[in-house]
Amino acid sequence: MERRMVVARADCPARRVPDGTPLTIPKDTFVTITQALGGNYTVTYNGQMVRVDGTDAEALGLEPELLSFPEPTDDQIREEQVWEALKTVYDPEIPVDLVNLGLIYNVAIDQSEHKVTIQMTLTAPGCGMGPVLVGDVEYRVKRVPNVEHVKVDLVFDPPWQRHMMSEEAQLETGMFF
Image 1 (cartoon, rainbow, N blue to C red):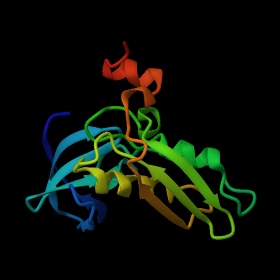
Image 2 (cartoon, rainbow, N blue to C red):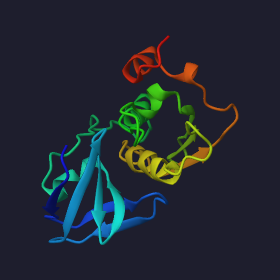
Image 3 (cartoon, helix red, strand yellow):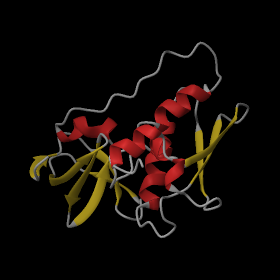
Image 4 (spheres, rainbow, N blue to C red):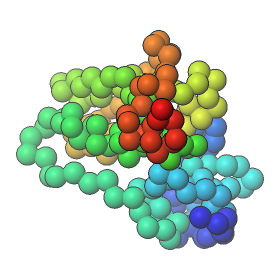
């Protein structure tokens, strides 16, 4: 996607890069789209780089990323839906989702608290986009029916290694050999 300027059609939630601080782009504000990857958008707003989740893209006049689930029949969180949501979160520099990159180590569900706890890592401990990725995971998993709280624990043991990627991700990135 080429860099282009758009006007926010509605107030648009975003997260500042790289610290992940939530903010709102006000309606009728000009922003410049600098990157579209994995259904998310990186834009410049008031001289700052911010990330707009693809599910909120309509506020910028763009096609929204659809993340929908069947209407729940009870108050239980479905683990497969949590994994489905996680597969819609992409590394900001690699066009592969976090699950196929092997960055998600564990998903634990507390049904009584309606809480999901996720253990994940980064491709490198010093990755400056860590807070943004954590925010992306929280944002998407909160869209799963019956999820009220999401806790993401960044862990670095075991350290991430290429073999943790799915074969599909290795092929996509040219790291299959």
